[in-house]
Amino acid sequence: MTREEALDSVKANVENENLVKHMLATEAIMRALARRFGEDEEEWGLTGLLHDIDVELTEGDISTHSKLGADLARELGASEAMAHAILCHNSAHGVLLETKLDKALFCADPLTGLIIAAALVRPDKRLAGLEAKSVLKRFKEKSFAAGANRQQISQCSEIGLELDEFIEMGLVAMQGIAGELGL
Ligand SMILES: [Fe+2]
Image (cartoon, rainbow, N blue to C red):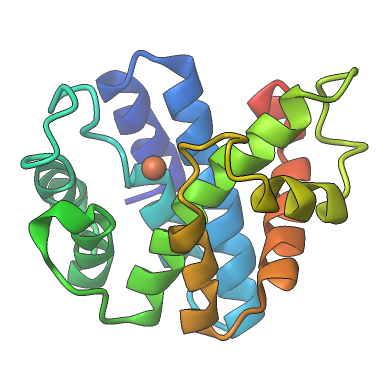
């Protein structure tokens, strides 16, 4: 599967532009994590890009979300490792996070929402001038972007990253695709 094929499939299955942007942001963070850990950047990036491909198809049903996504990813040619990471990013199935790829996707997913929310409350609504320390401050405000699960983000410790370092990496990765994110 090429990146273009993966992105075409995401766009064919997801109408909501913000959801597509969420997947692009997750891809960017996953690529940065793969580079950091010397892992396969394409594999990690495409896992991030595809991880919510089924969200509209499953219409918010968490009992099917990510099961269908894993199947769709396999059909596109994803490896079992990628499909497993996609499957277990939804903890509703009770499938344990096993590999570093599983754990990376799990903590990267909610970080995108926190960073986007932190950018949107800036006067310029841009990622460019946002600093990691501001995102960290927002992280500690429980009511801010409450949907961005703090406990899940904190599980970056499971892949050996301190929270401040993880936030910095995520922010820089997303700033690198700010144009695509419209931020
Ligand atoms: Fe997601």
